Amino acid sequence: MVETNPALANIFSDRLQQVVPSPIHTFSEQVSHLPNILKLTIGEPDFPVPDHIKAAAVAAIEADDSHYSVSAGSLALRQAAQQFLAERYQLNYNATTEILTTVGATEGLFTILSAVLNPGDEVLIPTPAYPVYAEMTHLNGGEPLLVDVSQDDFILTPQRLRAVLATHPRIKVLLLTNPSNPTGATYTAAEMQALADVLKETSVLVISDEIYSELQYEGEHVSMATYLSQQTIVVNGVSKSHAMTGYRIGILAGPAALIAQINKVHGFVIMTPSNPAMAAATEAFNCARSLADTQRMKAAYQARRDFLVTELTALGFDMVRPNGAFYIFAKIPADLGQDDVVFANELVARERLAVVAGSVFGPGGEGYIRISYAASMAMLVDAMSRLKSFATSARATAV
Image (cartoon, rainbow, N blue to C red; front, side, top):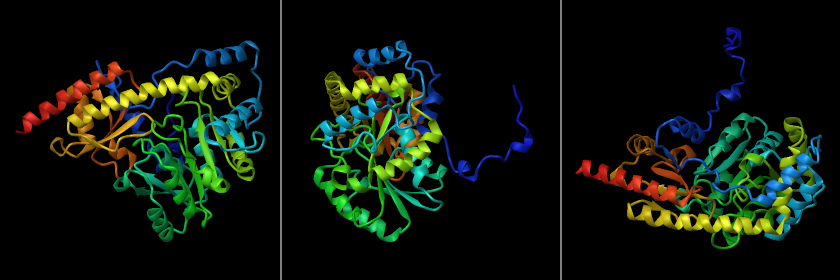
């Protein structure tokens, strides 16, 4: 074992000292060693990557496509992404100058924040939200401004947005997730238009995280870029829609002047994405079969969602019916206690069932749990059996 020089104990930046590891992954790893543990913690699609997409990656390897690409990613992939955004969401971008390939949506988010934030700039994050957003903001010198939207069915209203902007002049970025992780909430066209009407009066940059856009169940996905393209960067990718989380391919789309500056940071951070992964993502974005692949997965997710809503409601949990992604954000019944961290830990201890405590997603998440239904129906049936056993036992003990 290599010992650290004690003189290096304080070598790390002050920004890093503000950051904590992902509480979702930390908890998931802590319980992984337990026998018979059933984990509904991570947003990891349980489907295999479609064969024709895997074949594209294999073909790239066999063709010795192993050399540096350009930092923005292969033109073939950017053209496929251009076609995908245009056909699916009527968003029109120039593949050469307005689309950037990233190593997953996460790198894209980090790179945008790194490119735009100065010390003290605020990033407005409607919560509950994916906790990585706040940590990325800290790492890049910004201040996360967490705004609880739980009382408005987990969406940011124009009235709330206007009020927050009026009292926080240092807001530089709005980080909007649609569909939402952890709640599954989605925005209608009217709701998005109303937010855009407020934002167009400002110089706030909107980072629109739309990684779950293909997994919206009722209605059509609506992008902020439809209404505010001049100050929006769209974040998307193939991880959730095509079960390609390990391929690490995301895309950014936005005005050329913004993308050019963001690409400066991107190029220094990762140099270029992986060629075989880009070949696979090109197939995912470009092939008519890919839409059928996604629709098949989405139908399974919807059936799982409906099953969980029914089962959880019968156990006394309350929730806003999720319309996208693959999570349920459920309010713990009052008679089972409102400390979500205690609840999650006791559920593991007694029933070997792991879910995520809602409070890790920020203000508005207290007293909730997040359940991922990116798991087989058999696993979900087992999970609900364990949760029912836990609730029945807890209620009997309380009498």
